[in-house]
Amino acid sequence: MRGEPQGGTASAVFVSIAAALGGFLFGYDTAVINGTTGALEVQWGIGSVETGVVVSSALLGCAVGAWFAGSLANKLGRPRVMMIAAVVFFITSLGSALATGPLDLTIWRVCGGLAIGAASVIAPAYIAEIAPAHLRGRLGSLQQFAIVLGIFGALLVNYAIQASAGGASGEVPWGGTAWRWMFAAASVPAFVYFMCSLQIPESPRYLVAKQELDKAKTILAKYVGGDVDTKIVEIQQSLHSDRPPRISDVRGPRAGLLPIVWVGIFLSMFQQFVGINVIFYYSTSLWQTVGFSENDAFLTSVINSIVNIAGTILAIYLVDRVGRKKLLMWGSMTMFIALGTMAVIFATADVDAENNPILGDVQGVVALIAANVFVFGFAFTWGPVVWVLLGEMFPNRIRASALGVAAAAQWISNWLITVTFPELAQTGLFLAYGLYAAFALISFFFVAKMIKETKGVELEDMEALGGGAVRTAD
Image 1 (cartoon, rainbow, N blue to C red):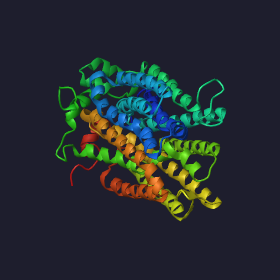
Image 2: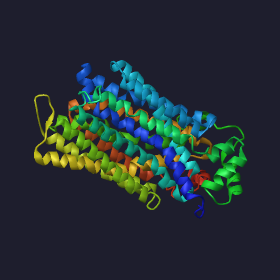
Image 3: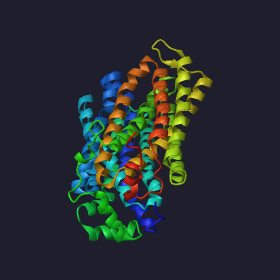
């Protein structure tokens, strides 16, 4: 571990913000479907299973996009992959808005997912590679901050559009159905992301891998600082080879993968298995189910998103002060308590003829508080910290490829949670939230055993820390 380098902090912050805008697309796409589910069910006459498929379809595309993003980034460079992702998302946003049925909407969302998955890999890898070590946690947290801003932006736009139309199925004053404009609005941040991608430099570690040492030195001097020549040598040594990185580098003795890659996969899975995206995909319809009006349900979802933003701001402040491991453990216990509370409330509530829980005044207030505590507990810990760790925990040579594999696992886990929730909810909301609470508890013990602290450690020192900041052998 070294002293803090004095690079161009302002420059590093600027390019990190630009790269993190991919997270805004991620968040926007996560939440834009929230306001459309009820309208799609009414307009196309689809049931809970079909709704689950439409909602979750983008996630399968995300998994594929994430899997191949590392290889593409190693061949084309980080900013070019960002540009491609922005163009694809722009086109698919308009395609989703013009969909004529659940089938073509599903196809458009899968294609859009390819872009989101790629952006979700490139941003944390790029930020970790260009940020000074003493700022890496805070700058890496910008990915999650952009995600929650994207969620908030989508919910706010959805709320405004449905309010102007009298509901998501209504006609807006300027023409067209409200839910279609919700999808079309996603093209705006895609355009902004593309323009920002044109302004940022290539990753210095990518340039070293390509033997473009003069360019790498220039970028390191501007954004990282310190002894640039020594850092170039350290990067070269950490790559272990003169040939370009490739996805096969992640192969190893533990069920076909390196142990560090498995830890990244499990981190990604636990981040999703606590059920956080149920709140942002289904919260509007969920609160309507338990008695809220459509307008109040939309407003409640916006409040959830504001809590999410507040928690992420706290994470940015804490991550380089408290460290990654402590935050994850705090988050696991906070989420366990909140989710367990929600499970108990739904288990003890009266039900109507369709088996939907009927919450009394007190139960409704406690459920809302518990849901927001859950969101806050995730937002200041597992939301940003997992992305920080995934961006920094892997050795230089396998970073992009390993992050792609871990992110693909995250998207598949997200899909599993999303597609199963409607059926779990019909069986009983207590079952869904009880299951998520169990995963939160298990995640506590996983972090306690497997994760080592990476606060302030240079990327070139991660391997020496223990195979990428985790235990690699038992």
